[in-house]
Length: 149
View 1 (cartoon, helix red, strand yellow):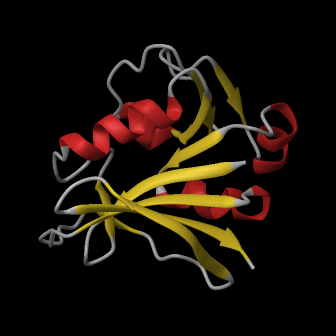
View 2 (cartoon, helix red, strand yellow):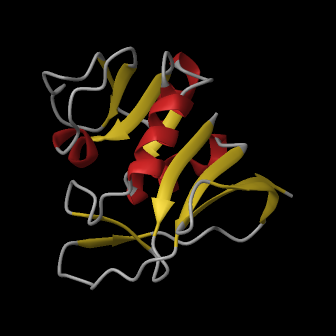
């Protein structure tokens, strides 16, 4: 199982249930990387998502299944058991909850500063993860893949 996120220079990955930036190259990378696959997101992240064709959307949460989710799992363990090859797309709490089951983090590092707001969502690469490879998407976007060491 793996996770894919984008992160600003100051560690922000979102605002509320959405993204605080528009980076075409990262959105294209996300689409290509997740196309045809099962993606897993927390309830708040799903609320902010547009329609994502050709993907199976799994909600990780304790409430009721949202209309645009294909399935809901109430615990990280059940999510992993049902969807062991899923890609976690956020938010930060969902990624943290799934860390035990992840073997790769695909992180687009954006060379931008996002003005922090009350609803800004932060994420730090956890200790024990090392960069395995990287590739440039644009002048402001570099993807780094991290694995557990």
